[in-house]
Length: 253
Ligand code: SAM
Image (cartoon, rainbow, N blue to C red; front, top):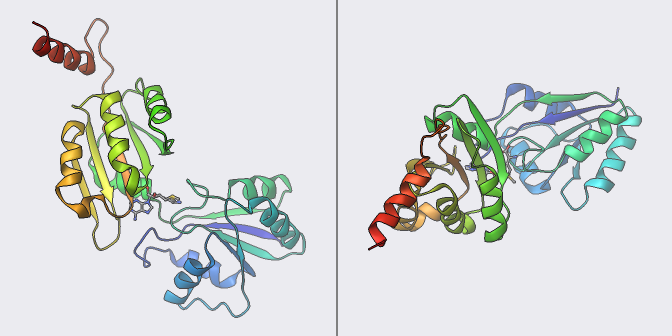
């Protein structure tokens, strides 16, 4: 019967893939992948037999057309797996539209879990909080980014998790400092599962120095985590207000 498998793949280290994911990828008739070349590399690394498997490109620019094609395949009793370039499909990656349409047509959708950069970063961060919010990518323009960050200021007791491109990390951290204040702790989880994996925590006020201290610190892929902040007791002054007061005390005559 036509079935769609949503298969998690590695975020760097090619061995971070489940036995079940490999079995599914070997068994399906079609694999829908964001980048055909990376998919081929992954399949070759695990000697997944693909003589009878066809690869379909599915990315943000052709998701609608590819979804039509995949639904027609499912209707013809073919099995299809969707994989992202890295990690879990649909998490800051294409696929949700396809899955929504496949589910609406009542074809089975089966998740096959795998790696995810946000959860991997959280797991090694040592941050303690009852909640986390996965935000993904912030807007690329500073003004808009600061507005979105300001919307998150009252999410107390919650770790905030962002994805960011390496060439925007500096400006993003500058905006985080403007919005959350220099005392808030940030964790950089960089190049996870890869050779230059780094997990570094510091105050936002020290973060730009750390990033610029070594040109390697600005390379690769990043997850940014902001430590949780406790809700100020009623009548208590928030840490940002304390910081602003301290600055005023220094600058005012
Ligand atoms: N679907 C993926 C997942 O499940 O994590 C996310 C894909 S999103 C297009 C790519 C972003 O994920 C990168 O810009 C970076 O923020 C983060 N990312 C992916 N791989 C990573 C890694 N090995 N180390 C740190 N961050 C990573």
